[in-house]
Image 1 (cartoon, helix red, strand yellow):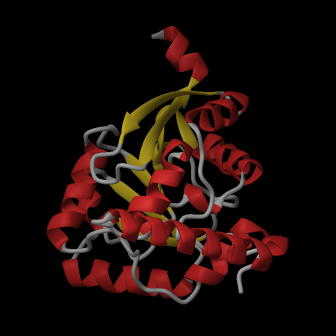
Image 2 (cartoon, one colour):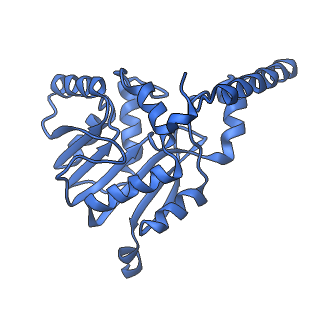
Length: 245
């Protein structure tokens, strides 16, 4: 059982350490391309992209053609093995894979134009998130952009649990039964200290992200998520650059 005493980050490591697939909502190549297109509508192309928590590079490979160099970081050897196999099969030549975590990037990485953290912030506490942004600060170029993508929005936590976790309930009696089941599952997860019981982990408000980013010297621009209604994206740029503009 995943327990709170070891922390959310440790629980996520146990969850993902042996996996070979990113578990995207829709996983066809057409959908992976759409996810990449959403990112490319937000982040500047060109230069060096650092993809933190790249997993099996299912989206990274769709981004690679728009950058000169791509560095994919993940802590899971099985994910990196799957990523290398995909890179080889697709003959993508500008992706380099590295072993590391969100809180400790492999070095030397310097002057990245974009640092992307896609669908992984949910496995961090606020303190962990600050450590992650400190790492971003170390590697990002002065005019670079960081993107915290697919951040679970705490305003939609109850909605997600009622409508996504339980599936669409057609009748009032079905919805009432699911509420009772949900309460039972929440109570069991609390007693077992299972931090990932709802498939998410940590939920953040925009204020949470803005406050941590501010402490780390970043301004934030929030964007709606195209394909996940209960998540948002956060674009970060250095405060001194934002003020000059």
